[in-house]
Amino acid sequence: MSDFAIGKESTEFKKGLQAGISIGIGYFPIALTFGLLAKTSGLSIYESVLMSMIVFAGASQYISLSLLAYGTGIVEIVLTTFIVNIRHFLMSTSLNEKCEDDHLGNKMLYSFGITDETFSVVATREGTATTGFMFGVNLLAYSSWVIFTGIGHLIGASLPQTLQESMGVALYAMFIGLLVPSLKKSVKVLFLASLAAIFNTIFTIGGIMAQGWAIVTSTILSAVMIELIEVIKARHWGVKHEK
Amino acid sequence: MKSEIVWMIIGMGLVTYIPRMLPFVLFKGMELPPFIQGVLKNVPYATLGALIFPAIIFLQKDDIWYGIAGAAAAFGAAFLGANVIVVVLGSITVLALYSYFL
Image (tube, rainbow over all chains, first blue to last red; front, side, top):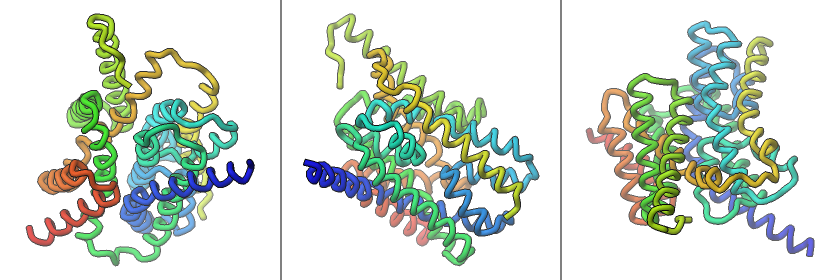
């Protein structure tokens, strides 16, 4: 019986690693560039790799480099990091509903690996997310992030500029690749994604709020609005709730 | 390593980890109201929309067609049912060709 359980866990873990490959590819250029920029900002290789190991959040790591360059104080950098990453609270709340029941310890461990990318891969997967799957996705994404930060710092700017630029599309391409299959199946998904995209465009281009808050606010607004419409539809026309 | 930088990294790590971890502790074994559950199920797709737009358009600040070409390539490949990895590699290839020829 326990053999069976271990077998199941290990295939789930492998599935997680497989699902993590596109994140690994996507992190490659970003981590490489981070290592490179960290070097030019005066961080040592140990400091850069340590930051990728402990923080594991692309956007805020980039922002911290530019703030350091401006001579911004540490408290302000930490505060900015908090604002940029508050959106993960929403993502974890959503994943908490999707992940299988398990010891809190396991959840506290894999929750460290929740980024925009791992969240998107796990959340758009069909069925419940098992603990093995979570660890698989996170391990591959995390390794790619940490290893390529170090390599980026070592090799400096030797990668061709055009290649680095064209690889910058990787994560967005992955988001599109995750979104489109669900979008083809359900009009609701199309409305959700479009509405959030419109809100986010208004907030960021209009300079209404910082990017971290803009993503949280547009996500909440569109998720609540579409849900309200569903409820009203169900109440008035007896349309069944779409699952 | 400069101790100031190490403290900064530890601080950044804490404020990043806490929002990621807290919901698992706060809402453990709690049955949320159906409306909230519905909203949370909507969150992934809304987040994806917000993560993609408008950021992808500004991949290259001086040429919005660059980002649009990358997005179109990814969308086309995904719409035809390609695996996510193929979508990613295809989009990178299209943009490499774009900067090479244009």
